Length: 415
Image (cartoon, rainbow, N blue to C red; front, side, top):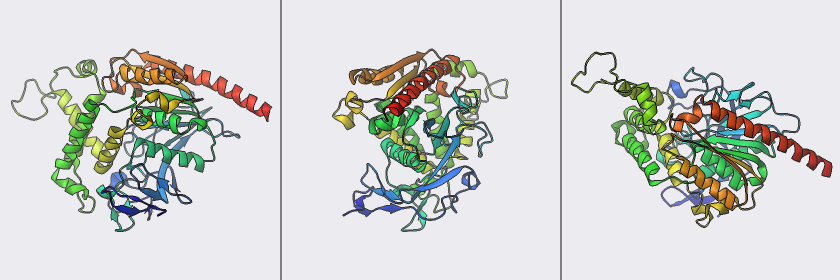
C-alpha cells in the first residue's frame, strides 16, 4: 500500500510523521535546548523514502547558512559534516562557545569564501541538533523514538539534504564539500544527483567502511549499550543518560582521528599534574587526561542513540555494492568535476582508500583531480591549519569557479 514500508523489525509500518515542536524536546537537557539558526519541516508534500523501507514525512531539519545567495542562485556550496560535527561550521558554536568546527576554512576571505559563496550546512538526518533523529518524539507514543527510529544510511542523509536544497529554491550547487563521513555524503551527492552538482570535493574519506572501521565503531556502540543508564535505548523516557558509555565511545573514536606522531608530539609520556606515577588508576599521563576531557565534553552536546545510528550508517556505506560491485558504475557518464584529497598521516581513511575512489572516477572517464597532502596529524588534519591543504582546496575552487561561470555563460547564450 502507498505510505507503507518495513520498520526496523521487518514488520509492516506506515509512514513516520514527525509531530510536535522541532525547536525543543521536553526530555532533552540544557545542552540540547532550543538552538539558534534556521529550522524547516520537510517531506510535507511527499514523504522521504528511506533505504530501510520506511518513509518519514513532515520532519524537522536544522541548518545554517553563511554569506548571501546571489540573484541567479549559482553560488551555493553545500558542506557535509562528519560523525561528531553539526551545522555550526563557522562563527561561535552556541553550545560550546568555541569557533565552529571548520571556522578555519569557512568565512569572509577564507578558503571557502563567504564573500562570494553561499554556504549551507545542515545537521544530518539521525542527528541530535535539531534534525529528525532518535531523540525526537514518536507521534504514535508521544515518547522519544529511541531504537524504534528507522535505521538510516548515508544516502538517506543526502536525500534529506536535497530536499533542503529544493526548499531553498536552488537548482544546482556549485560545490558539495565534506571530509570523513562528509566525504561519503559528497560521493553520494555526485552519484545520485549528478545534474545538481557542478563540483564534488571528497576529503579524507573512503568509498566503503572496512572491517577495521566497523570494528572501532562496534567498540563504541558496545560501550554505550553496556552503560546501565542506556536502558535498552529508552534512557530519555527514564530521565537518564548513558554519559559514561558515550564518553568511552568518544575516547576510543578520538584515538583513530589522531596519528601516533601527533600524540607523541603533544603528550609523549608526560605526567599530568604530578612528578611521579601514582600507582593507581587516576589519570597519571597527560594523554589519559586529554581523552577523558574529550569524552566528558562530548556528552554535553551529543545524543547516545544518535551516535549508534550514525556510526551504523557509516558501517553500511559501500558504494560499489550498490552498483553491481563496481565502484566506477556509481559515476558512469558523470558531468561532475571531482577533487579527492588525502593525508599521509591518516590511518583511518588512508591514501590507498582515497586512490580507490580516484581510480574508479578515472575508469568512469570523470574529470578528477587528486592530491595527497603531507601531514603527520592524522585523520583530523582536514580540520586543522594545514597550509598545503588549504592551498589545494582554494586552487580547485578558484579553477572550478572559472569553468562554472563559463558554462553558465554558454548556457545563457544557447538560451
